Image 1: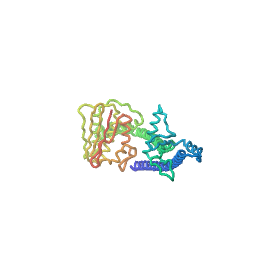
Image 2: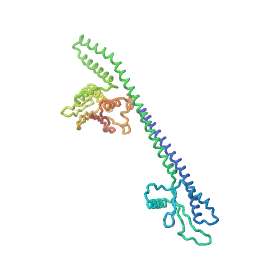
Image 3: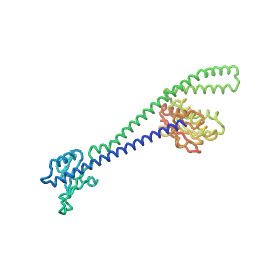
Image 4: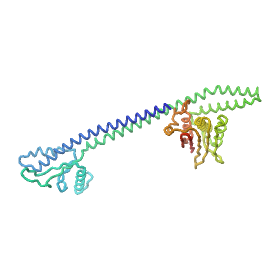
Length: 392
């Protein structure tokens, strides 16, 4: 539980750090773009003044200097409109898509109107004379748009953030995949070593049981001992199959579930009632009976722990088209909503004792070995939990 919470806190910290970096990057980029936009506006003010000077030129005007200023603009798109909205001149306008001259003129007029609406315009009064009254319609509008470089700078932070996010997602996926593979190796090694260590004492117990049968054939405890030894042998067999692909065979699901009920009935309190809701006809599925029975046992044991030794466990088998469904419902304390997504993660447990590996192994058995699906169908605090297994 604590390990899972630590992982969650680390994820939250990383997300917050990523958000802070993204916001900081956008703020800095915005300030830079704002300064560049002001600089371009100042350049266009000088360019507009050069246009006014050219329009009012006389014998004292330095035409070469004016033309140098006008022709020096090679980056900022600009359109000069008169008071009637007609195009007088333009520069740095992309007209590659226009096929005819009429299309070009129409395109320039449309762009000029868009610039006017966006208020990217500098109005220049013509023929202004201190000794005369200037006509109110004697002016030109120098309309301009952001340069290609400015537009690229405006979009660059978002592209940069997108690339960084893709890299982070790939890195996290690779890290989780590597971590999962490492966990799988640990589980497989631990399971096989457990099976190996159990093998010798189980063989010895089997031999001693046979001796006891011969010396005390009428002792009623010896058959029970024999059942427990066989149970240990079954558990060792289950551990030995972890890490390998067990061969599934056609099995009657009702028999598997009944075996679990019989086993749990003998080993749980009488206050625990087990209800079976099985269909009348047999439900045949391709599974490894030993491993799948382990999954159901694990769900039932968790249910008993959740009910603290008193309550009802309902086992249901359903046939939904081509798939078989198994549901295990209890009347226990339930699972908190924030923990439902973590119940199948290794190390997660709400018990004071336990490794938090039971449901993780159950998920592995159902999904990797049987290509099925296991999940929490519903859970409510104080009411109970229902686990659902779907076999295809």
